[in-house]
Length: 109
View 1 (cartoon, rainbow, N blue to C red):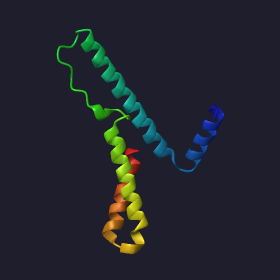
View 2 (spheres, rainbow, N blue to C red):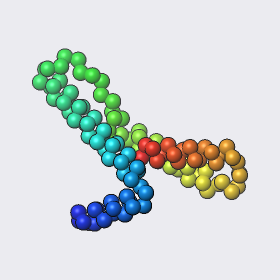
View 3 (spheres, one colour):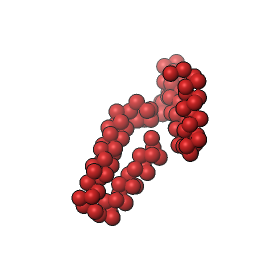
View 4 (cartoon, one colour):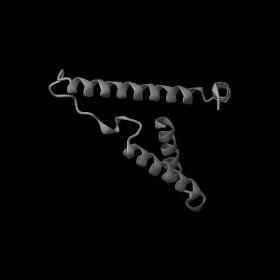
């Protein structure tokens, strides 16, 4: 896929009303990059002896965090089970829970 393909996909997504979704993705990616740069700066300054006691590093502050990946997998599996069984139980509470979990997944993805 070349740059032209990405551009066309981006235009389609924007045209389909996914602009806010793309903005959230860009904001999250930018935040992740800033966090990684800050972490690298802290590590390098610590190695050079400029910082006596470095701030604690949150291992889950990066997108590679295995805990986050496991959480999203389980959350997605839960949503899928609720979706598959919605006709069997016909519970408003379960439907509301499924919708809330789906919204949460969209906000954090």
